[in-house]
Length: 346
Ligand SMILES: NC(=O)c1ccc[n+]([C@@H]2O[C@H](COP(=O)([O-])OP(=O)(O)OC[C@H]3O[C@@H](n4cnc5c(N)ncnc54)[C@H](O)[C@@H]3O)[C@@H](O)[C@H]2O)c1
Image (tube, rainbow, N blue to C red; front, side, top):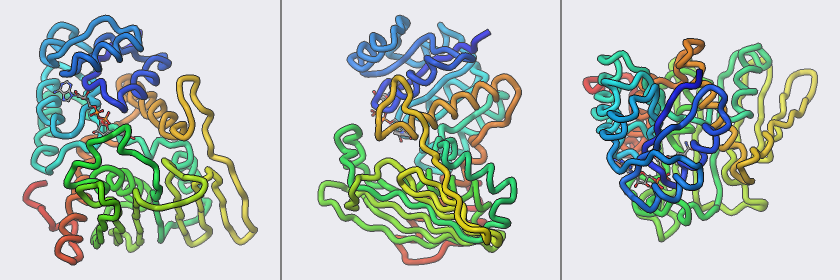
């Protein structure tokens, strides 16, 4: 039997959620909610969803869903998660989980107290290339990793689809930085120390549109996470992430053209990690669209008791902590000791 879900927030990115849910065999979206009646009508008509609400509490009470998919921006995440946790068994929340550790911790506690799963829609680790790299590393293909770089650099006009990005005071670290820090933790382990610089390059943005972070992991490994929304490349690489992971037996090198090279003492082996374009999707978004579908398949596995949340709200607290610490590191020109920073809030 399909799990019955509802979606809150019918904005730009929700269309990817709804397309992917529509082709998921284990779940279906039976109702949607948005404060904006125009978006509600547009998205409801687009996906043939008749049950539409402008108030999330009314929807939860009337629909009594198995799961809720929260696709609003972060300012509303805490209140919506706290609203859902008492009666909905699985709560999915888009990244950023929240804007502060206090809010994020409250959301984790609300779900824990009520026995609900809190799963963060952190989809970069669900991109085909990163799933393949994780499997190869787990199989020992490069030995023990000791250095990584995750780079997201482009000049694509994101401000057309997501105009709020130009307005926010905390921009790239809270937007793409969270994805890159999640990858760094996923591949290299927890972080001990962090340093960061930020840049404001495009005059139309209010916050930082580039950053470079240096992470020292608890196991001694080093990672660099860097991002720019003001970098010229041809062809335009958006929205692909380049990555390098070096180990004592070899190196994995992912290009923004989806080519993954395994370098070992025996030479170089090149694999193609490009996913198919979903029937509902389009280039250049197809790797992101595939990751949304893969993430949702994982959520169904969690609901069916076959997997633990990846990442859970509790796990994602550490990623948010790195992002918030990165702002402090950049502002004061200091290296932050992560385990002790804001320890009282965790
Ligand atoms: N994981 C990814 O790859 C990825 C990509 C893009 C965006 N995002 C994230 O998705 C989230 C949404 O981004 P977006 O670009 O779609 O934003 P958006 O502003 O286009 O859409 C948000 C929608 O939520 C609605 N909303 C806000 N508060 C509400 C409430 N209390 N009840 C009902 N509806 C409410 C708004 O009216 C709006 O229609 C953000 O947190 C963003 O960071 C993630």
